[in-house]
Length: 412
Image (tube, rainbow, N blue to C red; front, side, top):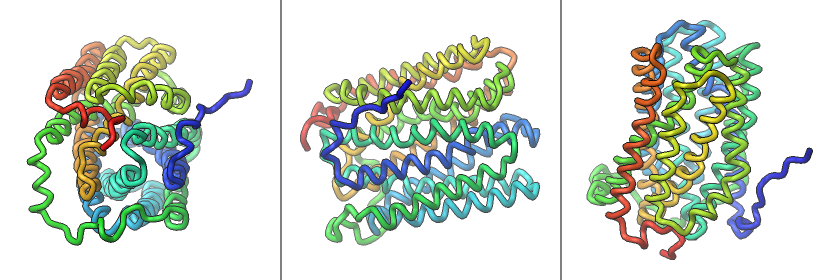
């Protein structure tokens, strides 16, 4: 049977840099997803670390990443998108190499936590520069599909990465970090040689100022959007932490079967991201994101009933539908809300907020896991409640945003 990838006809007019970043995203996501979904399992099962402590490690890592998001956004506006992307990926590659060496030598938890945090920092420098470049080179009415294209690239990587990682983890966990280092370094070279800068010298800001950064707090609509997004990203943070450990330790599936669940997530995004993007492009984004948040709440909220792999696959299907709806819509809305000369700043600020929520996810999930592991229905109902709060918040925000901002298909 031949498997067909989704048609990219609607994206044929994109700038070549969008496509280059798409292919780079495939490679970087493959390298990242080979190792990171299994990190919590390694810490909990191999090093015998409690899930609360695992959550703290991931919390610290993501807080550091949050700082990287805002710094990366500022630097992308000052020095340009390309330079920051190249340096960030090169530094992350070296960090993954260091982790491979450290883990193979039996390093303690503190050293691993520091290096994982450094990896998060460098990875976070990359994201706002990439998202700002998309906003630079893609017109408003096409951005939702452009961000969707990047997500397709990322999920192509996620389709292969966990499958390979689940097999390789049974042989050597440090080897996974070597593959991640190679993939990340490759992306650095791709951007260096194949991606042209998207911001003109006249559009760059000439300095960094905490006072200027503080002006963003006066954009009350954006601040409201960012605050509500924290609850949504708490849900995002469950997939590679609480969901992974619960599925293997409590439901009893293998690491390879966990890889199949992540592959389902990736395959769904690859196959249906563009049809969904086209279907929702004409609606108010806040309401679209609210619906996606509700799907997240349902998908995670019923995990506690899971008897085996098939049921977990159903939960993953619902969660992935929420992801497909939410992620590109939120990025397109951030781009629409941001002034031209401050796109990196707004993307960085949104990245800071998303990383904060993402970091809080494993922490709250870990605390709930340790407290309610013998009451799985309550455990996952508590986790799902964050998605419900996000859905309610976005519906309230939809009455606050003007239509010209909330509809990404309107010209700027």
